[in-house]
Image 1 (tube, rainbow, N blue to C red):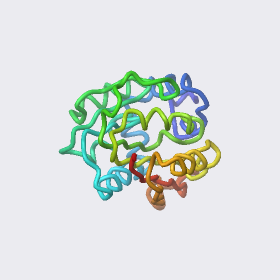
Image 2: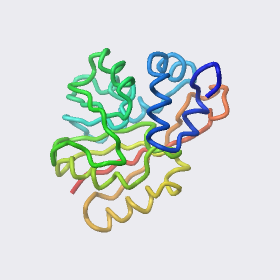
Image 3: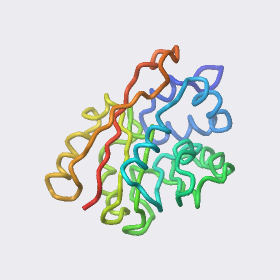
Image 4: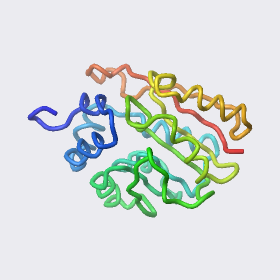
Length: 208
């Protein structure tokens, strides 16, 4: 990180869960203003709208919840927030958006019961080394039959982190419905930084 504190390039260079913990420990208090607002971040709202448009209902697990940006678009639903950073979750909890917050590492088994959630959402977690597709079976375990998923996946990470092939395998095994991908901008048009034109795919499907 630079002497000016965490920034966009630091987020894009994460490689391990430990990197995430270190980055967001120092960024939590200013994340909304220094990242979401200043960089024209649209992704979280797009995931929330896509989930609701697919008929999503609560209780919902917000995966990689951060400071609660997706949950801001899910008001009126019961939502739990899961993140590896307790500092980010503390900011989210202060907004009163979550039923509860859960500090957890998606690269490990989750201490959550089977079939606990009717919906699972995520924005900004499945990208550039944060978390790969190995977590999908565990997410299916904690989802109820019929649960709606709206998982944002960075377009470059769809194949690079194995999500495309993993989702296709789950469809072939009859564990999820065919996946619909909604293409969305991550940042507002004209945001004025190197990643301003980045796109993400929101994978929408249901557990069978």
